[in-house]
Figure 1 (spheres, rainbow, N blue to C red):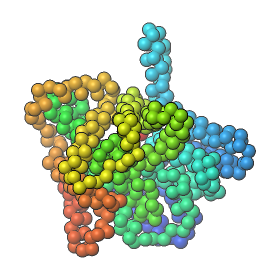
Figure 2 (spheres, helix red, strand yellow):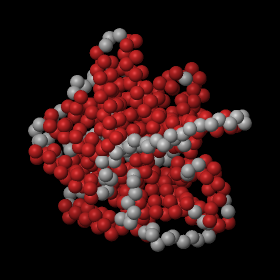
Figure 3 (cartoon, rainbow, N blue to C red):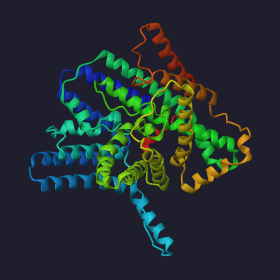
Figure 4 (cartoon, rainbow, N blue to C red):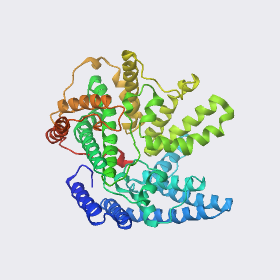
Length: 479
């Protein structure tokens, strides 16, 4: 049930009417509706994995109560470890089992030892990486005394399975979402209107930009060995934009849907392509994941390694970013992607500028050059993210350095490249103008209704006319 589908639109309209017109004023029934709707939304993909989601939620609910009630430190630690092993155990089995088995066989092969391994035909449950991290943060925050466990099973299960952000985030923390589930909600017209605007912006980025770019980048990667280097370079630039438009588009839609239901969930992107160094980029990209790993992985590691000064900080960064890569998928490309991004922090650490944010100076040219240089760097790193294997990525890089870099190339008729490029220009201009706002269509400073309507209807028309012929799954669904 894709967000950009007629089926989901019908589902949400019915849900919205029930939520605000039938169950308005009843927190209990609104939360029950959220839970029921979330489970229906998830079961539409594969009802069998709904049982895994429900089972993990119920186990974690009772473990949370146990951790919160007991005063015995050893018992608290034992209950926490049971929860961590349950959550991470399911994640490792479904997402990484075949990768670990294959990697083990490959390691033995290096020593000329042949090992017969048996992989399994495992289906990756949708959203498991996201809801597992929600559960883990809940248990850790109770253990660390940051929150009290909720006594309502419905509230906790709704927190874990909240359908706007269940499949691909944002990864909301318990202190963000649970208090909102526990208090009465009334319809706020301004919040709902802003939610609709953010949904519109997300659909524009997903359907017009990401899906049109995907038609080209997928074709190039499939035939890169026969194409000129100019096509390969252009595809790299488009893929970086495609991933951003796709994932931030999903996040915009998710946040907008939550706003329509009276919730304010975690912001996931803060215009990352306007960052001027790698640290700035990761502060702005997939914020809910990077902040999660910063709090639960990097900060404890940096404290543990602090005796080793800058070397300890580098080690903590490398471990943290390698885990970011592994979180994205069971492949050496993702491992290397994360490790490489960690390595890009080393000059900042050695120069003592890791925590210093680039200021927006009056030197427009310098700012532009920093942003452009950062984008080129991201183009090259995101190729590793996209490639099927490291060998394919390095072969792709090798083919960039050829005289064909200055040759023209043909774009197939199935790609509406003119519309995609125009939409990209619109996106960057709008987001630059609105870079101090939560999203590009936040119209706080526009008082003229006519101007607003022109923008809204213009975007709707653009979507209807120039949407890609093939609407693809969101990229982060597979994570």
